[in-house]
View: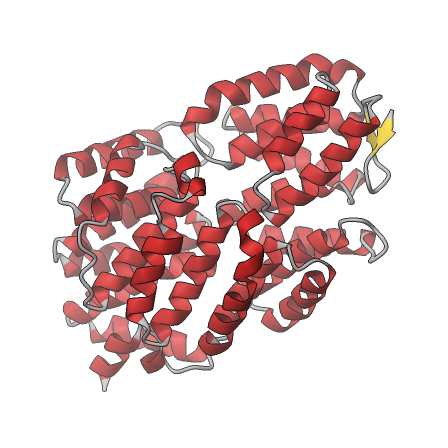
Length: 449
C-alpha cells in the first residue's frame, strides 16, 4: 500500500506507480500534454493499479469524444476488476466512473460529493467533479464545493496551487474577480507552468475589461505553452478576444491560422476534432464575420467536423457551436439532421439532461441557424426568454457570451430597441468599460444613441 502526495492510501505496491499517478493528477489540473503518458507509465509499473485505470477513464470521459468509448470501457473494466482489494475511496472513484459512463451523472455527482466529504484533499475527485459540474452550468455548486473544501487545504500540502486554481476559477465565474485574482497570482507564483492559472488569469482580465493588460500578460506567457495540451489553443483564443476589443483584427485572423486553428500543428493533428478547439474556432469566426471580416473558406473544415458529430451531446455547449459551422456553410440537410437527433435525445426519459437539451440546446441551435438565415425576429423569440437558462449549456461566462452577442445583434436588426436597451444596461452595469468599447456590443450601443 502506497500513499499519494497528500497522504491518501493507494492500493498499489509500486512506489513508481504512485509517484507517476501524483504527477499525472497535477499535470491534469495544470493542462500539461504529457498527462496521459504519465498515466500509461503508471500502469506499466503496476498493470492492476485501480486509480491508474480510473484516471485513464476520467481523462477520456472529460475529452467528450465518442471515439473513446471502447477505450473507456476497457479502463472501467480494469478498474472494476481490481476494486475488490481497493480502498473505500478508490471504490467510490470506480463507482463514479461507472455511473458517468452510463450517463447517470446525477449518481456520479453524489458519489464524488460523499467521497470529498470524507477525503476533501482528494485532488483528482475535487477537480473531476468540479470540471464536470462546470460543463453543465452548475455554477453555484462549483462555488459551494470550492469553499467547502478550502478549509482542508493549506500551503504546505503538495498540489495547493492546483486547488487554488480550482477555487479561483469558481470565484471568478461567480463574479468575485478580486478574490480570484489574489488566489491565482499566488498559484502562478508557485508554478508559472500551471496553465490552469494562466486560464483563470485570462478570465479575470476579460471579466474586468482589461484588454491591454490581458493581451500583454498572455503574450508574456507564450514561452511556457509548448508543454501544454489543447488548452493552449484556448489561451490564444482568450488573447484574440482581447485583441478584438483593441481593434487588432488582422492580428486575430493571423492568430486563428497560426495558433488557434492551425491544422498543421501537432496538437491539432493528434486531435483534429477536440471539442474545445471546435468551440474556439467557430465562436471566433462568427465574431470576425460580425465585425465585417472575410474569413474565406475557414468554415468548411469545421462544418465537416460538425457533420461527423451529429447528435453528440457529451458536452452541451458543443452542439450550438457545431450548428454555427453547418449554418455558415449552408448545410441545411445536416443541420436538420442535427436538430432531429437533439430532439430525439430531449424526448428520452432515461437521460438525466433531457430537459436541458430540449429547453436550451435545441432552441439555441435553432437561433444560430436562424441568425445566419437573417431571421432575426425568430432569434429574439428563441433567445430573449432563455438568457438565464443558457448557463445550462455549461462552459464559462466568456464562452456563453457568444449567444448574448447573437441575440443583441439580431435584436438590433429586428428593431427590438427594448431588448437591446435592456442588454446594454446589463453590460454597462457589469463591466467597467462601456459597451461602445467592447467589440461584441459596440454596434448595438451606438445604434441606441
